[in-house]
Image (cartoon, rainbow, N blue to C red; front, side):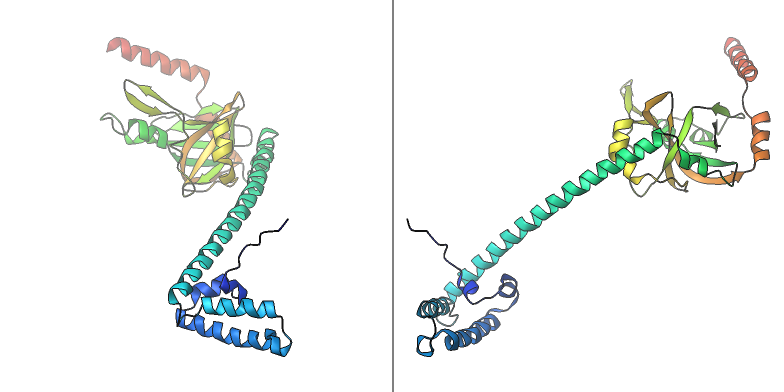
Length: 298
């Protein structure tokens, strides 16, 4: 049974790379072919002890690529040679990219899994934030509230800002128009993501009320791991989104807003805030009673 061999392109017979064939001008390329042809004649001519079959192949290839006698043939074979090279190169590059992508995807998923296990198992790095300083006070721009209510006439600037105080054991929160902080014991800092890396609006949970869309201030755990975790940084930085989670419900990752500025707090300052600026049960009752009185009077 005979084996059918694929016909070689004449440029391939002369040992020219597709890159050279592509880059050189026609005249320059043909001069190079003539120079190689002369060398091959000396090496393969039968009168000089060369291989007759090889000499015939070279002669036919030269006639095919003779730009002066067969310019159309020269250009057709040149085009086919470059196209074949391009397809092979692109296919090879595509396969290499696919292999790299599979490897990167594997490492990416492994990295996310390890980071998330680290988050769930203690937040040691969070505690290290306060080895030297007893706490941090952050000025936050609440972008979710801004997106939901900035169009209302009754909206006031204070609505869109809040203060957060972070310590090893708890988080204190106070909106811009509030006098007292609220204490959150099971509310844990996860990290920050620079605003330049991504915009969270497509990831936030949302609901529709009376035909209008409203954003919620949290992202599902699965979405956060898939889309955000790779950008997460431990260090708190200005102009970054800041994220928390509640140990009572680990299915939600809360976006508090954008860090505008922050300052360090001493132990004495934190104790003073806890004593005088954190709302107590009695204070909550007093505020609710005052609110009820205002409603009745109204």
